[in-house]
Length: 73
Image (cartoon, rainbow, N blue to C red; front, side, top):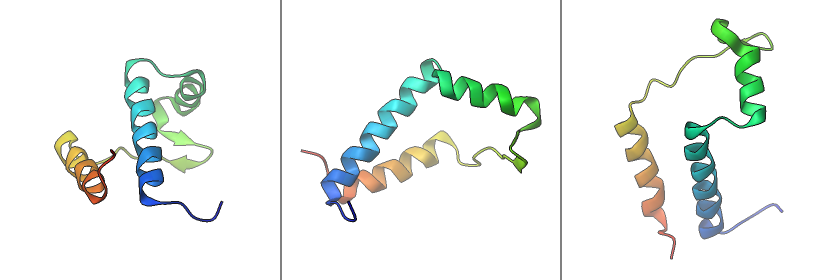
C-alpha cells in the first residue's frame, strides 16, 4: 500500500504507542534479546546508540501535537 489516510496513520501511531507503554511494564522477548546484545556498551552491530535527550514532558507535547492534527473518533 503506497498511501493511507490521516486517521489510519494516527491509529497506527496510537497502536505503536500502546505497545511501547506495554514494553515499559515488561520487555518482550525480542526487545530483551536486543537489550542483552547491546549491554552496557550501548552499541548494536557496530552502531553507537545514544539516549533520547527529550524529557517526558517534551515527548508528551510532541505526541499531543500529532494527535491534534486529526483526533480519533
